Length: 201
Image (cartoon, rainbow, N blue to C red; front, side):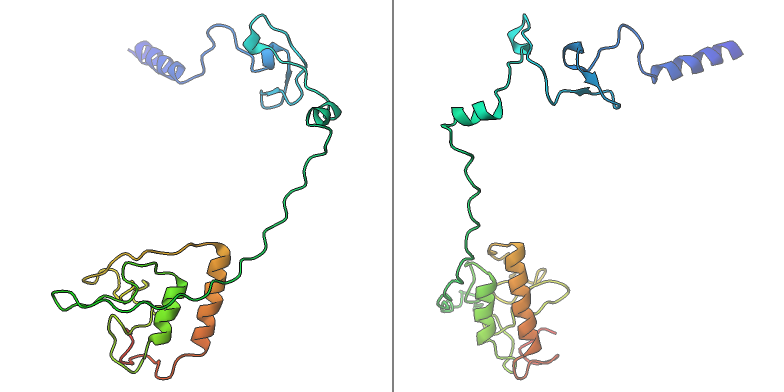
């Protein structure tokens, strides 16, 4: 019984060990390259090789001078200069509010349009913190529960929330928007205080 268990243990251990059956294949290029410490062939500078199988043949590489001559003798073109920073776009005209729907609900002026930083600034400029908050009077930069509002001032999870059409994003754009928002927070509008009628919080 003990002998059967020992044979079973040795047999199962052998199933997970590497196979030594047959000859070991070399990873060297055509079994003639330098083998590095990791067992991989060093093929950075292979010599020309004519093999009976043309797929395994390596042609001689031209020298750098020959390469330049084949390109017409011209040196490599210099990298193009970095493009100049784009001038800020002129502010778009603020759209007018759509008429209320059949149920009497009116979406914001940027509903169904791009809801980018410029659109939010236009809504912020029209916002009156002392007037009651509505889909046409809200702070687009005010967060509620960690979320930003859509183009009608409605937050995710609330009735009638619409996923806005967002503008382009890059690190440079985000840094410019962050500086703009910090400037707005440093100089709040008159009446902008927690609990004001035009605020969510």
